[in-house]
Length: 211
Image 1 (cartoon, rainbow, N blue to C red):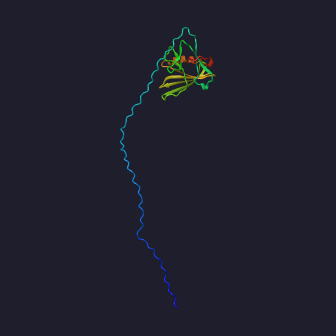
Image 2: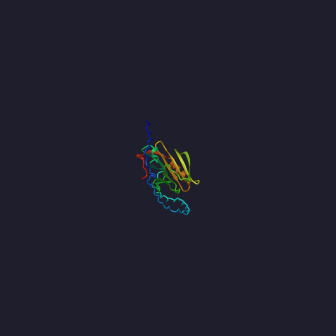
Image 3: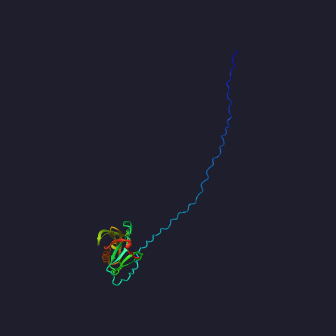
């Protein structure tokens, strides 16, 4: 008896939908709002105004107290040292001056001062080192004035002397003074150094500073 012929089994075909799948439409970003830019209008070129010229206003002339009749040959000026950190605590400076030539007063800023009676605007005031404007230059010197070693600093503007500072002291005080003038600078400095050369110190309890 012949063997039966077996036909191959064909797998069932899946039905494929020929239409492509519908995908959701991507959400497009909204266009950025258009910002109206202001028109750039060039500003007119401005001509810079010249800087004002600084002029020094002369200070009023100090009124010196009237000289006493038959004054002593010398009087004392006592005061606190302008460099207390470089001085011994509890000490004042003392200068001696001729009351017929100088008067003890206060300057236009309320500082104690010695004003010369016959040399216009010749003044000695306590001082400390300070900055100077760029149009000034300073000559530095170390020299003895009387019995005192001083650092002497002369300030100039365009070659003209403006003032001189003296920094010095003794074993107890270190202090500074400024000598200013408007005329007769040489004579003013000569007279001032007579006074500055007498610098000494004393205990504060013995001092009689200017009120």
